[in-house]
Image (cartoon, rainbow, N blue to C red; front, side):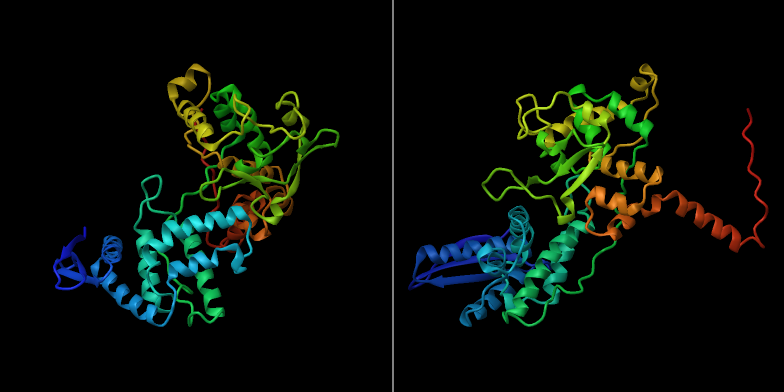
Length: 404
């Protein structure tokens, strides 16, 4: 950790910042000036930068920043602030998405790259930044998901592309960045019988929402934003209109309702009468369908506690035996109910374009890329094609019989 100490000087004020570099050599930078508070502030800001990136990198950034100030160039932090400002017109996104981008910039971009002059940022800076993110721990203690890192990188790359287009710098050093390929956590798909076991162990008050998520494939933020007026009980089949979802709040604000994740997210879903019936007596049209005991919206943290407890019981051999059930042997996320829904539709032979529209995917390629491997006809067709191609060399298959 860098040390910051005042230094004697005949005239004016001086503060010294000291720290060891990666080779263990003690290095220092000294700050001078006639304004005591300004000099100390500059030294302490530099020390915080040293703690984040090391004194070697911090000294390089200080040198570049001094040159940038002389030529009137802004820093990466300054440009990210301007890029994400609605008044700049540089980015056309919803308020919720803009808020999320601002959070990512504040937490992941500016702490490592913010002090670097915008026109001095190079490929090495971006490469080190990506490597740093890949070395961080995720919520579950493992590495941050590659998809998450790519999303953060994409925000930076988009900002730099606009900066290049506006003549603020030459080239985009984030373009073509390489990422470490890691095994990603796969979706956990519940069969109908496994879902029934999990449902058995759920608190009765939580069952309607869980059944709705599994029966419609809606995202949690969409389902918990559903109002009674969104459900058309007179239609046959009954319909649920997905027109809104809870958005992540701007800094210092509360959650608010906005449009779904994508334009395709605004959709109409057919639902069986029995699924609507389990919701109980309908309320006023502008009231939320799913609420907690206080009549407020259901929040993910509260649902997670109930979900996690039900999973524990659904995987407990003794508890399952008492209920005459078999342990499911899985720990899906609530979001995996969306995947289960899609898999059940595929198993029933529903075409992928219908599933795409039902889930609100922007592109059919997303649906195929996510669920194409579940298509039973495709799996059987692949096996038949291999058998045909290798028919001359494969022995005749004899399926062993299981002894009774």
